[in-house]
Image (cartoon, rainbow, N blue to C red; front, side, top):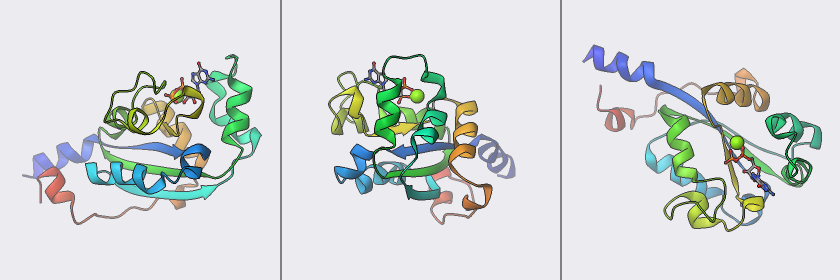
Amino acid sequence: MLQEQEAHAAEMEQTFIAIKPDGVQRGLISEIISRFERKGYKLVAIKILVPSKDFAQKHYHDLKERPFFDGLCDFLSSGPVIAMVWEGEGVIKYGRKLIGATDPQKSEPGTIRGDLAVVVERNIIHGSDGPETAKDEIKLWFKPEELVSYTNNAEKWIYGVN
Ligand code: GDP
Ligand code: MG
């Protein structure tokens, strides 16, 4: 049992998820949060803020050569964003599955973008695309003390260890 517990603990990871201004304005905050929550992931940080354009450019620095970069950063800084950190086994990769493909025209039904968005410029949610970006994005958006460490009572039922 201890080995199982250690194995699960070793797989624990954290990812950065943001509900973009379109998701907030469309009243989709609780819908999006509930998909991560019902899956069994743990919310360890959350806040609402309007990012500056400079901050949006930092967040999307990888895309600075793309033609849509400026419009994307204007949009991210155009209104309130819900910034979150979710924790769980495999949450980085599986979080992206819950979110669906970047272009909602190609996202599968059942995914957040597939069910709730129509065009790529307004695809309502961001999720880190790998372990390195997850680390960098969590560090960009949150101070270490804003991440809460706690045991969720459901964990033993989600992971099957005591
Ligand atoms: P993501 O990780 O699935 O969000 O996708 P990317 O990291 O490739 O792109 C970041 C964001 O830029 C996407 O979520 C879209 O909002 C936007 N984006 C990506 N590709 C395009 C595009 O071809 N045109 C426009 N207008 N926006 C795009
Ligand atoms: Mg991305």
